[in-house]
Length: 84
Image (tube, rainbow, N blue to C red):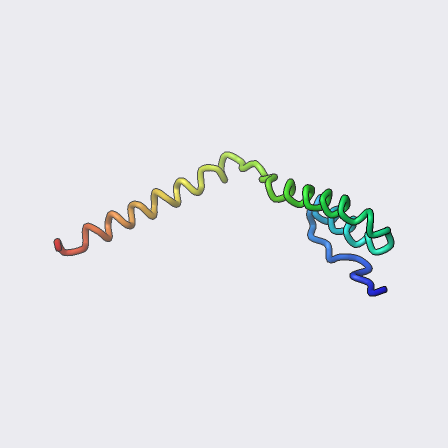
């Protein structure tokens, strides 16, 4: 039997690492068990992708300031253009 991996590379995200470990562990399990394990791993990975860390108040305001600065720059650039 061909071995997939002895240990997958760690991602630093515990839920993702657990899902990957479960898939690698299937090498020693009957094929009949694979589908359920893949479905579980898929659900775990989807959940990990949908989990977003909450922003602190300072981080939450930063994008708005950047958008305002960009809008100001765009307005200034438009004012410098000759009338067409």
